[in-house]
Length: 349
Image (cartoon, rainbow, N blue to C red; front, side, top):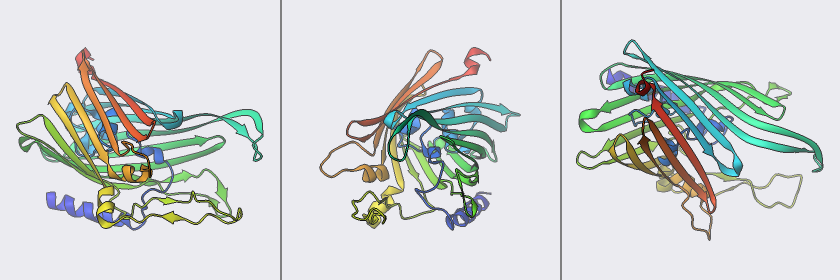
């Protein structure tokens, strides 16, 4: 069975690698970390299986018996006063059917409308993104769970609207005896159904942020420490950031693209996210993560910052798990996330 799963995963990975690009496309909000703990772990983790239902947004195969009747709410204060958040509820049926329903949203705020000559019209407009997550998972052995997510997507920027449909497919492996877990997921497989605008060829459709991720987590047997490594964008080796923000002399000609090429080792690490957690019990944790790609892309010559790192923690207060996460981007620019979750079984519901 394991051999068949491995062969199938490789086949699907290479099939989608043929047309996938990292860092491009629409609905990029799907890559935002949905909870404070995920943010603290470096923005992604597809291998950690416990009672935190928010991990199912990253990998639906992380639903389990522990996420039954669990509800979670998450909110974030992002850059430029952008607000985003999520909510999710899990329910199991028949002992081997794990379901969850969640929603993600981003509110970019209210903007003043102006003409192309920068004359204010007195009108305002908004910009928002939404995604519904319908998740299902089931165990195929006592260690392996497979899962899938269906994601209808709606986006509205001023009068421009778009609809899309995406799917995640994942598998998770958990060896409780050796305190080891692993996960593999294909994220955001799908397409725009309606583009933001039409051109001479009809609807202008763009690709979704497809992402192949592989991760593993290991807890030490005699210390309250757990380490994780998540590999992302495995379908695309070159993660160089291309900047067109260069001065030009010809207003009619686009600026020359400037690309700083990364070496082999640097590029390999841009695909990796490293994280560590101090977990003395299920009721308390402290987390730290390092995202090398983010550190390299936000690094500014002459300025020192903690970009690439992220921090957070959580504690159980009464019947609620409360979490906080902080992500530094550049000097003075931080993202803060808050999470609260509970099992309705605590209230006999």
